[in-house]
Length: 266
Image 1: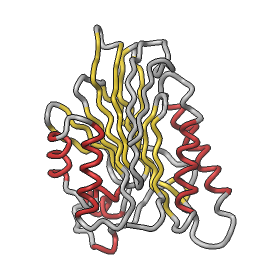
Image 2: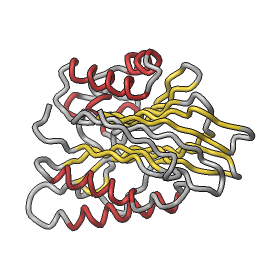
Image 3: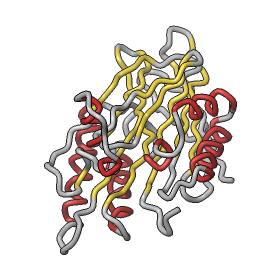
């Protein structure tokens, strides 16, 4: 495990995300925190919108560019997230990613990787080739890192259904733990916190040398005509951290009423 944590995470009013900093030393941490700050600035709205997503990416790009003024490797960050969105008054998941941090969906007992890595390995595989180990850590899209700006995120809009479980992770998990073990763990642990804990533990037991950050978000109720969604969310990063929030999301009302939030650290 690295002696400093370049991962950052956000659990806000309308968005959950993991950002994996690039650049080494303190630079990666600065970049991932810039991503979190930019998305937090958009969390005053009830729902995450495509415009809000793009504003956050543009703001993060500007801040990271300003941190790139000195000599050396330009800092950057990946991001993977899930936003709470509305379409015709109905709740949807808006899943997005830049880089090789991943989003998975567990629905009806089946695990699906939603995001597609922006990496040299993925590009070679898409072309029908065999990727070398040297290409393993080369990403082709990031926020900052000397790559073209503004960056565009891949996006997926999916209707929310009761029982959905979304798992977000940095590559510290996905490079060490197979999809089969991820699926088995998410199925074995009903509590999001326990699932997140176990996934991080599995990555560390596999000899992981990178930071590992996992966010698990459950849809625990979709009520009436599906215009209300309750979610339960837990996270575990480089330090032990548990967050648990439950609330309802009626169309046109606040996502996280202040009298309904519950936050718990472990």
